[in-house]
Length: 259
Image 1 (cartoon, helix red, strand yellow):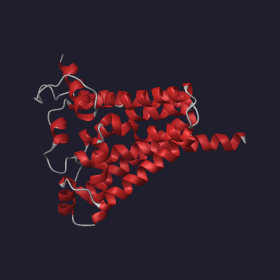
Image 2 (cartoon, one colour; image 1 turned 45 degrees about the horizontal axis):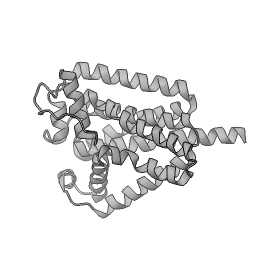
Image 3 (cartoon, rainbow, N blue to C red; image 1 turned 135 degrees about the horizontal axis):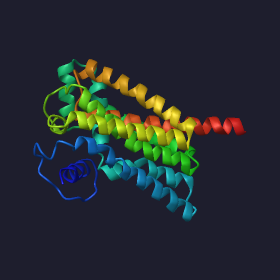
Image 4 (cartoon, rainbow, N blue to C red; image 1 turned 90 degrees about the vertical axis):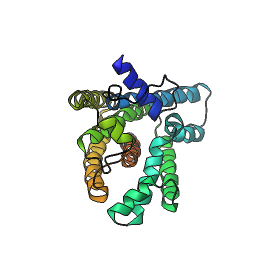
């Protein structure tokens, strides 16, 4: 029952899926963070269903790519993109650490957030137009689980910049040893399946994502003195973009070899 409550808390917080709601008590939050990767199955399944619908009705690639680019935002309620935008504003301010943390908390949207949100979505749209087969899209779908596994892992092993906030509520009572074991298992499964299904794309994605994981932790510590919920959203969005880039590079390489 405790694990079911943890899964429900993860889905109710990080997705639009209607699930039973439970109070955030010390007991119910013990395993909520390690349930976070399961939320990635929702946009992954949504992408797969959208692809098959478009295939069935002979939908054009532009319409497919347009909805595919925004589908993760629609299914998660945009919570991670909000963190991406706030972090972009903070980093673009080039102010001291205290001011950057204040900008993260500011509910107003700055010009840089708008610009880089548009850049992000246009990049996703363009990359989805290049993913021409189901196997490539399955790799991207698995990437939604991989990105959340890495985000949860970073939240557990990296100091929190504030010591308060929603992310802190997920980490302060977490059963860290069990959570780490489950997250490393999720990472191993995602890695194995990606490499098995599409070795070139899987290898590109995994290399990019794990490199970004270490760069992000260094950036978060240098710029903010640790991580926050907003920087975690920033990390997750960039990770998912890198997965699209890695898969797109693999598709491009395959076409060059064949053509």
